[in-house]
Image 1 (cartoon, rainbow, N blue to C red):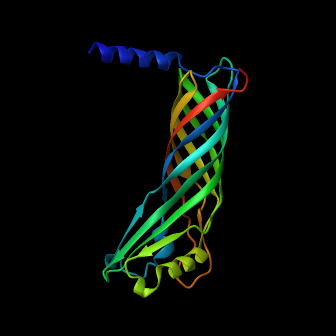
Image 2: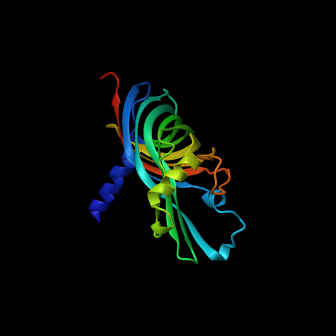
Image 3: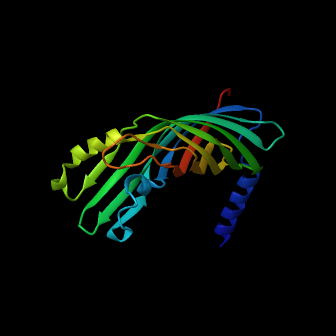
Length: 233
């Protein structure tokens, strides 16, 4: 019991006094994992003429890696700081389909982005912080679509995949992010971010599949560890 109390007291003191120094520039490195989701894929791919009781669909999360470099500066005598970042992230989504005829297929959209994120952070107490800001994701592989099915006899999966890649193209991703984090006084940081997509991340080209153009937004959850180093020691 005494050990638990001591640990709690230590964490409480870190929350009060643990923080990066004010009026000092830092550069940081961050890495972590993402879980991402693309909305409304069904309405892009499946036309309303098909009775809903004849098929089942699920939109699943796509998991990936995120890495970034940042510059950090906390304004003196203020709870505010800025943290512009540039990084790489894997964001996308997954669509699973099955119908009464026994056909099952999965379409994955494992897109990669170069991300630019000017983040504003607020420190209500110690090293605990709240971050907000926009994020621009520049698409690096707009044709990176994956298709697999249980009935390749209806058409080879690789052939269908190539046809889908020419029709469903990845777009740049504009989102707004909200984050919660903690910065330790020795430079280690941990943060969790949630992003709300505001742009269409899948562009539908003219096609014979009867797919339609639709606004497919990307949302994501991101968990990261980071480390800050002062520019001048």
